[in-house]
Amino acid sequence: MTSHLEISGASSRTATGTIRPTPVALLLLGHGADPAAEAGVQCPGELPPASDPTLVARARAARDALGDRAFVLGHHYQRDEVIAFADVTGDSFRLSQQAAARPAAEYILFCGVHFMAESADILTADHQQVVLPDLAAGCSMADMATFDQVEECWEVLAEAGVAAVTIPVTYMNSSADIKGFTGRHGGTICTSSNAGRAVSWALGRGEKVLFLPDQHLGRNTAVRDLGLALTDCVVYDPHRPNGGLTPEELRDATMILWRGHCSVHGRFGLAAVHDVRERVPGVTVLVHPECRHEVVDSADLVGSTEYIIRTVEQAPPGAAFAIGTELNLVQRLALAHPDKTIVFLDKTVCFCSTMNRIDLPHLVWAMESLVAGEVVNRITVDPETARWARTALDQMLALP
Ligand code: 13P
Ligand code: SF4
Image (tube, rainbow, N blue to C red; front, side):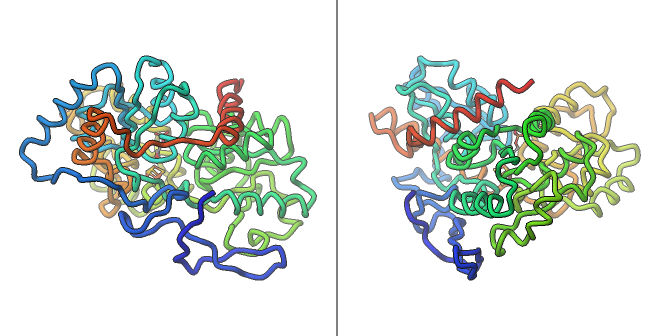
């Protein structure tokens, strides 16, 4: 791993038990260079200005020139201006599968975030090169679990005598390193659509699950899908000695939840649910399972991004939804369904800032560079990490 720029006061345990500062990967966006982080990497190259009136025409010309040699993937949370050029839209796993199903495409332009581009590199053939139009498009949740922290957590579990009966279950929203860790320790990857099946599978093989890196998805899955109690869950905080847990707490828990969260979904609050129920009579509150437990608990429907889209599409005219997920997607759903009332669940939650890093100037720059024969912002995963990450991804595909 390349070294991080150390800029934070967060801390974690050393082998001797003292507190030490840990590098925090989130740099000021676009400042500095930290190739080992999901976010905060400077984007090289001469970008066209966003005000360029010929930008759309340049994007079309570059796209046409690339033809079948390129395949443009657009995550559901991307901006409209980017989605307009996507050959396919979807959630992160579906997009990687789509890329793998098109071996003729030499270049995969991944309009999403860094961990998604890594997964695409793992799942596609060696001759396919994955490009992330802006390297600063990381994911703050993925950055909340670094490889060293997770290795240290495993040592803490071993010292408590529980590592041998613990199966890691890692959310797709994680770095390739953590996926590799999961594969090496006999675990599985999950998405927000199959987290319930993944955790049941893991509990059929071991006594405990180490759920990485989203505590909310882990808790919601344990309680809602598996009927576990909140008291069966403990939170491992990588910034506290021994994760802030005693060996007894680790031994008593069924779910060891990593202290990570989504900076967007984690901001929806219970007050917003109460507020929207008053403002929009008869509204159906529809949220993503990355939201906090109390929000999910008070919602009417809970599911992945694909589930949210399907639910809105299948609803009859006149239906009303308050949706708790990324704003680009909610706005597009509202525009596409003028016969339904669609509101954003919380007045104060913002766009995912890293998803929004991918804009038309970056896409044009990446495509024009490819046309000129220069592959920019290529995302690669080293073969050993990719091998183990693939093992964990294959395990997910084999889930009963
Ligand atoms: P899904 O699209 O898999 O539901 O993931 C949500 C998300 O936060 C992606 O960054
Ligand atoms: Fe990461 Fe949340 Fe943004 Fe998705 S929406 S990329 S999980 S910060």
